[in-house]
Image (cartoon, rainbow over all chains, first blue to last red; front, side, top):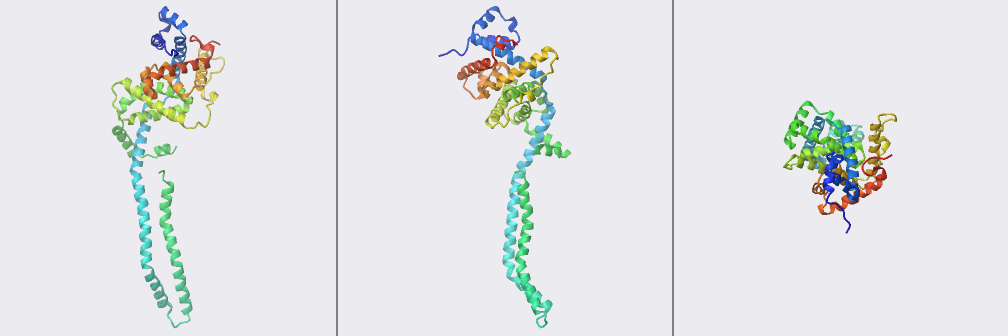
Length: 170
Length: 198
């Protein structure tokens, strides 16, 4: 099995990372020159640690207050989203219930509405006038257009709900 | 971007509320955070920049690292423990980045500020060294980059590195050995025995 480490490696690494390699004992330096593992450690540790020192000096990190502030705002937004999530569901369910109730009411009231339309036509135009044909026509038109009117009303109710679900982030 | 827009749209009351939420949610006070951040932000940023090879990505990951750190419920035994935990978060974020498909390669010419010819020799030498290191690290596997940086730039112990990368301590020496060999071979003879040789 190949050797992957050397017993002097920790001493060599400590000397390099503490910037004392130039002042390390001759014995350790001689060992590093003859040991392939320690030689690699010296090479890489010197390169990476000096690069890190330089990069730390040059790094432009945001101010602590800015990082704190962004984190605080994010907490706030996530909390608001967590609260809004069940509300979104409630809104959706309430909208669906409202549409269902509206349909049920319309279904139940449909015969009465037809009678009302007939009665209104009769009262307005009378039966003996020449307007009887017109009355019949208006009654039929109203009866035909009522379902269309209910569909339009349902769309008006449902459109904001659909938009809400489409545009919400969740 | 949408978060940024909403941040701007916050009212004064929401701002005050945000700070109250933060004080309740975060595991340290703002003052303690400032001290900790001053000590750790630069090394963490450099680690993120070197292991991802992308300075702008490092900016984003730095913010995310501290956000996750602030929200943790872990009890820390010492400052070292706290610092190692921070690097562990950073390592996990970098690992998540590796898992995502990288859409574009890093343009070294754009990512690095190379001084103009004629500037101070030492500065030029550092810039060249930085390019060499970045290019060399770029040719290593992501885990090898982290291993080498944590061991030879941060000086973490094998146990600490194994804990951060989710590896067994027993296998770490062999992994470090292979990563070292690869980096040395990528760097070439110019860096043998420490100095850059032109």
